[in-house]
Image (cartoon, helix red, strand yellow):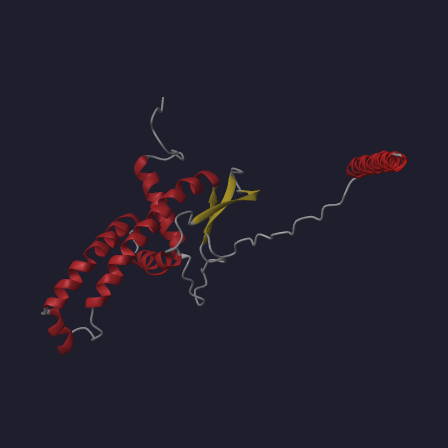
Length: 241
């Protein structure tokens, strides 16, 4: 039982599987830089086609290498402050090489050099390491992760009919997400039927208010007439006296 054993065997031994993934990672990184005069150049830059299990095993390996290159980028920028623009083996370069400025440059660049050596121990390809640290690190410097994508291909592999997929770097040939406007709200028959009873209730309430006003008006008039009649009776009694 393979308890607590991560990864796919891919039908190979450990050393064979490790060498295969290292070569695939170097091949994927080298496709970023295309030579137009090379007859064997890749059809699409930054993309290779392989089987789905191999692509799933390759993806975390490549993304860790890109993260390693991104971490080395600040050290390289800090070392540029102490670098010189003189050509190698010139008198100016030799004087810089013997100065304290070179010591500061070497100390600032040491972590970046260690990262490059670590990447080379995996890729075993100078060109792939240069592309990784000089191009891909700057390309994904503001991206927190997810530097590659896997897209399944409908066509099966010739021979064993294995399921194929392409693995490529993101940032190019990305799908544009269209943001559609919010749909207009059209009142339905149910909403109209709810609005009609509400209008009828409001009309009935208005009628009741008018009726109550009409009923209270005669009462007020009768009260005023009674007060006038009482005052008239009092005046007649005073005249009689």
